[in-house]
Image 1 (cartoon, rainbow, N blue to C red):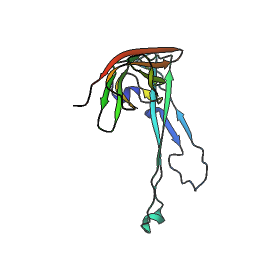
Image 2: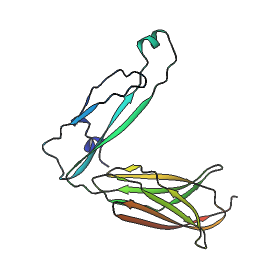
Image 3: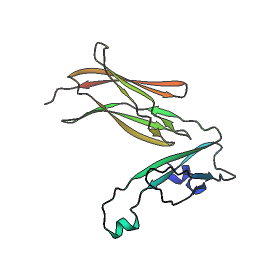
Image 4: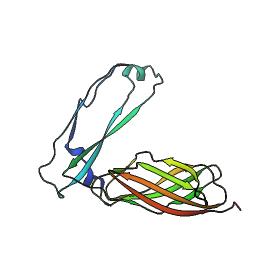
Amino acid sequence: MQNDDTYSCRKWTTLNPTEIDVAAGAIVPFRYTMQVPATFAVPARTFRCAIVFESMPTLEDRLQKRATNQVRLVTVLYASIGNPTAAPEIGDPQMEKSENRWNVEVPFANAGETHYRLNGDVVIKDAEGKVVETVEMDSSPIHPQAAVKVAFPIQPLREGEYSMEIHLKVGSKILVKEAVVEVASAR
């Protein structure tokens, strides 16, 4: 796995203004500028960085020791250089259960040079092929050169054999991973 600076555009990005006081209910525009380096180690890659907006108590609030709410808002910028591609992979799903929670855990990987998003669903069918549950994916990004395990909450299942189909939509393609899982009785 690469270090984060390999895929970071934070050193090229300037935010203006960098600090500002915003009155309640006001809308304040800001600008960001990216100055892209002239050369790169690779011909195509997507870079990313985050901009964080954070509320701070006023001086008067601090002096008066008033309670305040602190809010943090994060937005991510993506900059694609060239035409990088994602290389999505779906691993073997596992059923994870505890007393009060059931999940289908699916490993996702990306050997490409740009991110892809989790768009699609997980379909669980019983032994007769009847759909028991369909879980929509949440559009989280899977970054380049990364491997993660994503948990999808499901309803508890009865003892028996189930088939799963994971449908991952990447651009105009749909990758499908099929697996069979066994739910054993609690002992």
